[in-house]
Length: 459
Ligand SMILES: [Zn+2]
Image: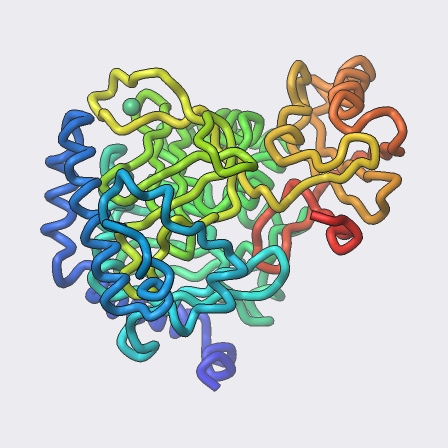
């Protein structure tokens, strides 16, 4: 009903409604303990590793105690474990899979739907999970995020272009080639990520140039399409306009980062979180990714659940009181680094975030090829801006490629195919298709792997 009403209103009233909606949402988000959290995180930026571990232990204890008190699921799961609230015993707690979370959500959550803030997460299986946040946790999560962005000068109210998964446009907008709505109060322009198609990119880009945002936030795959269009069509983005790009929700490759930084003449600062409320990973000014220990506990485990350097990420979050996530298998792989950063932050460093582990290619010869290995097929190549691998049959894969023809040639194609052969073996059929665009998912996000034969493969 509300949606239908919104659709028939004129553009300027829609803008006004979005501003009003934001004023109300921000009042909640930046109320309560937000300022206290923001200040605390800011002051703690240079804590020693010892001090960070102390905070982590305290918050871990509290998280477990509260989950056991308010969630019948955790109460039952932990009742036979001695001192489950001691972080040293964390490996004794069972791992929570996505499917377990989905099936037991009613027993896991600790507050009523009406008292919290809902967040829906899509799974690759298409089954959504609905988690509930307390308002206090939302305030703390925004304090973490804003703190990260503020290191690069961002504050609410700075001119920002936002590319998120919100459906904002009406038919009239599309007809008028107007793919955005503006919150004039907070100076945020929301660009639709559902209309990123070649014939429309010109309008997006020219509007961005005219809007002159200081920051771009959102799905990197959508922003990338605009950058690629700009490069291919000889646009020069005005220098000294954009201070930083903050990608959200998707894994970014080096190629994507380079393309964005070159075209928009700025720097990309990456961040990792999730709609379920995972603890944060933030990129610092020295371009290292730090695990924010004040927001949770991170474990990296191999297939037998033993600690390792590169493997699946298991998280325990300190900001999910409404739907506690304890030893949650979030479905992403990461690789840890031994390096120490010189930025002053003593949180451990991640070498790479490899992304979804349930996205893989299957070869009869070599079994499952995970996302990390798939993204490594770009090694020693040049000019591959983006690719997507689609598997509809066990015997073959189709790889769609977007290339920069100034850098790409047949010898690079050979290297790329050989990289694939090294991983999938020699029997599987590999088909390459050169395309000018790779359509996004319904959610507005880009997927590197589309495996349509998972149901045929025994896990
Ligand atoms: Zn650093």
